[in-house]
Amino acid sequence: MQDDPVTTGRLGASPRLFDRDFFRSLPKTDLHVHLDGSLRIETILDLAEKQKIDIGASDADRLAQIIGPGKIHGSLTEYLRGFETTLKVLQTAEALYRAAYELAEDCRADGVTYFEVRYSPVLHTRAGLPLTVIVEAVLNGLRDAKRDFGIPSGVIICGIRNISPEVSLRMAELAVAYKNKGVVGFDLAGAELNYPARDHLSAFSLILSNNINVTIHAGEAYGPDSIHQALHYCGAHRIGHGTRLREDGDLLNYVNDHRIPLEVCLSSNVQTGAVKRLDEHPFRFYLDLGIRVTLNTDNRLITDTTMSDEYLRAYTTFGLGAQQILDLTINGFKSAFIPYEQKKVMVQAAKKKTIDLINSYMGTPVIS
Image 1 (cartoon, rainbow, N blue to C red):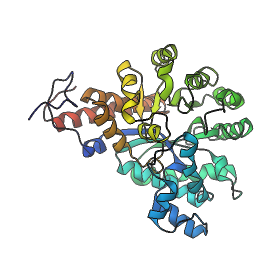
Image 2 (cartoon, one colour):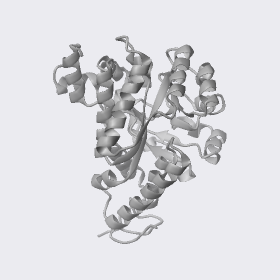
Image 3 (cartoon, rainbow, N blue to C red):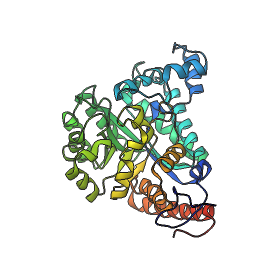
Image 4 (cartoon, rainbow, N blue to C red):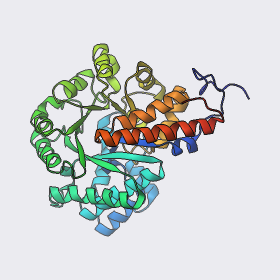
């Protein structure tokens, strides 16, 4: 068999190609996944029927046409329109519980061993549901999923750039109230262009004063200044996307030197127009530079992806070798918003399993 240029590299091996089964077997994190963008099509249809809500479709094919899973959009704003349908059915405690529980079940089936799901409770108040009930419904769903499937998780509560700083402050208050009760971080999501993070400083002041982890969507639909604000105004510990970080070399080095993780969502970035084609994504450049890159789905339904799919796309598009696959896997666990002692155990277990899997799959010990 000829040497495989995808997996052959500094390891000097010539194994068979890694396939989707291999990546499904990898221990993985998903640190950037939205609850309202990750429902099952069948669940949306069932919830709509039970709640007697008109979503414009009564079958899976028609609903998929409306939501457009995996569709290439011209902008982030267009991409976000798919959430108009999913949010219609996520206005009851039962629906939120089910969405959280099923997401955990889907993650476990995908080989994900830890994930952090994010959402903004304010988007689920259309039917008058109290914010505390919304948060507890999601936490209960995740708690029961951990009991049933053995998968740990955390919740990241989001403020919304394009609603108002006052609403972001209310979301921050919720994050503080549920710290150590399942909420592990705070985020600022929503339309990025023309909605600067610095307008939401009151929310981040409260969050940081209470020693809560911060991740912020930045550098997806706007340039490096958005990342600068996330880091230096709002105190972000991780950056959601960071696709345009490469445009500012000084900031790029700052992120690398301070080991600030990037929550990279490859497929989503193509669909929102953050990059024109997958092979134009700066992912490989960031990885080679040593930046703490993590892979994530963003939205399992809207993006039409899984973590196994994202790893496979990264592998086949950017020619990753075994060492880079190991680095990506470990980066995810190192970047999780969990206590250090728990993180150490999780990192060690993931590293051992990944090395054993790579060596077993390649038929010879090529990595240690």
